[in-house]
Length: 135
Image (tube, rainbow, N blue to C red; front, side, top):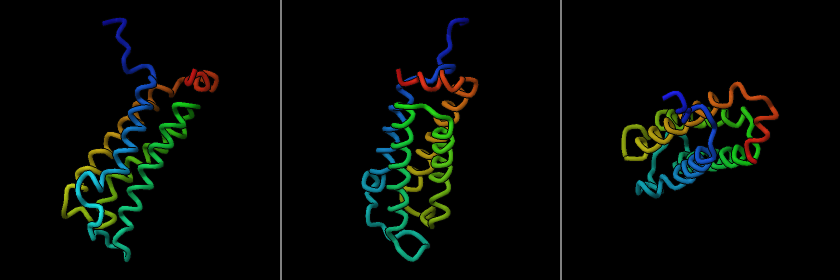
């Protein structure tokens, strides 16, 4: 087992997986059958859908930026977005009904854990090594 370093190196598939998660987040209201669900304690019921779509776009964009030019702040941003997705059902008032709450909590957890893994892999890299990630 001395040569097994699967979790030690930031690989390209992790960035592609992050992009896939972003797309899945954007599509989650429609995949769960709740695109027009009237949830949310804020005055506009579509606010939760807007937050979901924006979070998915940001996760996709950050993962794409990591694929092109890796920076540690991108991973920190993904961690924050993962935590937001976990908390969104409770903050926006749709935690009591529907499958969307489970999707957001689960996908948010995966986004957070993937970002923690990538940050851990890149923690000791120099700026030059980070810049060479895309090559």
